[in-house]
Length: 179
Image 1 (cartoon, rainbow, N blue to C red):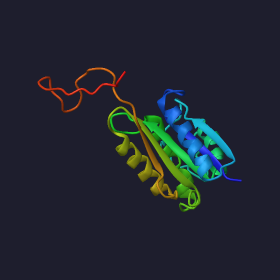
Image 2 (cartoon, helix red, strand yellow):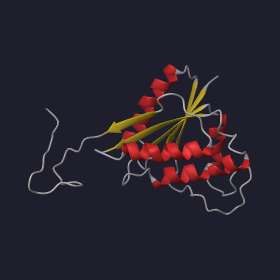
Image 3 (spheres, rainbow, N blue to C red):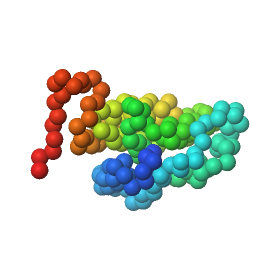
Image 4 (cartoon, rainbow, N blue to C red):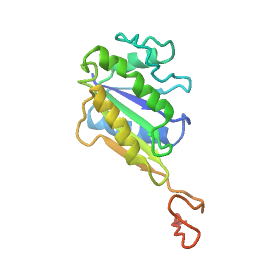
């Protein structure tokens, strides 16, 4: 039986990232005949790696990560999803990824070798490719496998008229949704 784990790195548990992850998990479930889907909304109180050098197979920091790693261990495929924050994944997604390193280090990267990683990034206008590259680079270093096209970007268009990166007041170009 194939198992999929959905890891939501958003601070809004039912926001755009949640919706994008749900949509992508449904697509993957059908494509790979996945029977069981579990999900994690990463806790706001998850610690990043403290480099305590006490890593064994499981991280020794006492927080919600121990519950998460059990779900990771039981899964065949994992979707990592994050909103874009300053062209980076959310801080709690970075914390989650850094904590996975104890499993990689203690097993010579074998722990993740048979696990397939997928990535979802959600942003307004830009940053999705950078977030995906960051998460993918971390997972590659951890030892995950990639299976074909494993990324999906979701872009939400701004509905306001603020001037953003690189634009000036002289000739702003705004594209609005048709009504």
